[in-house]
Figure 1 (tube, one colour):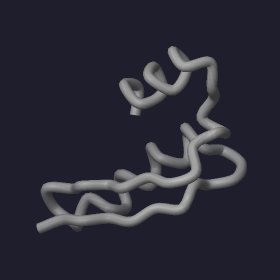
Figure 2 (cartoon, one colour):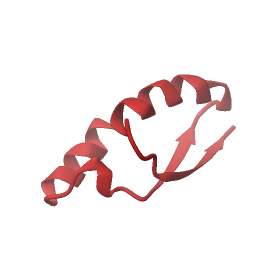
Figure 3 (cartoon, rainbow, N blue to C red):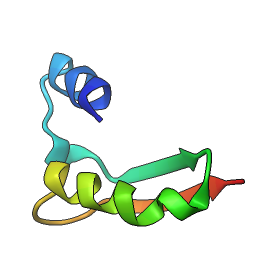
Figure 4 (tube, rainbow, N blue to C red):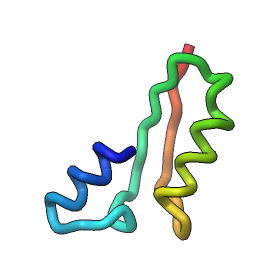
Length: 54
């Protein structure tokens, strides 16, 4: 998420400009842990998202 944030900000945007996220998890059982981190980066409106995992 820090890498994504850095890329977004390097293009004069903020995380509020993100409209879609595709999440790839090695284990879908990590979904809850991912969500805890995700909401820290998008405290207001959350971008649309989809997830893939094994």
